[in-house]
Image (cartoon, rainbow, N blue to C red; front, side, top):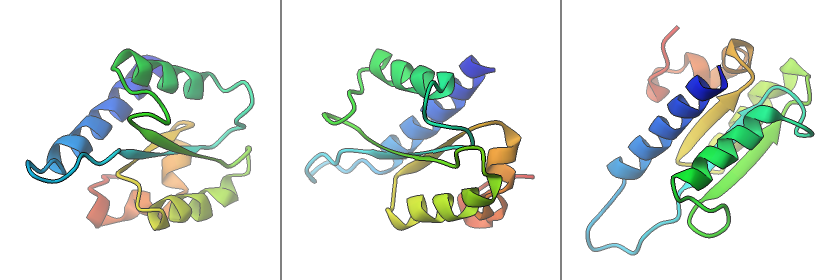
Length: 117
């Protein structure tokens, strides 16, 4: 499950990077929003996500920014955390924590983000 999650998250990030590239503009550092349903402490998915990014050459704080938000097991916090990431205008949102993480958030149901039920 973790490998599948990493693959989906990295594919989404790469798609966001490719679609926003412009030839004559200065290179923009991509900002990834990470939304987790569980705690940030000892989170294997977060560690796997960061490791996968490093393996692809993305170094947090150098050529990529990752905005982490965690619900700490309180699913009712997910919509507000997702809205905060949207307000930050991150390039892509990766969600960890299974289907409950995405389904509890309003952005999951929005047509403008391309999510399907």
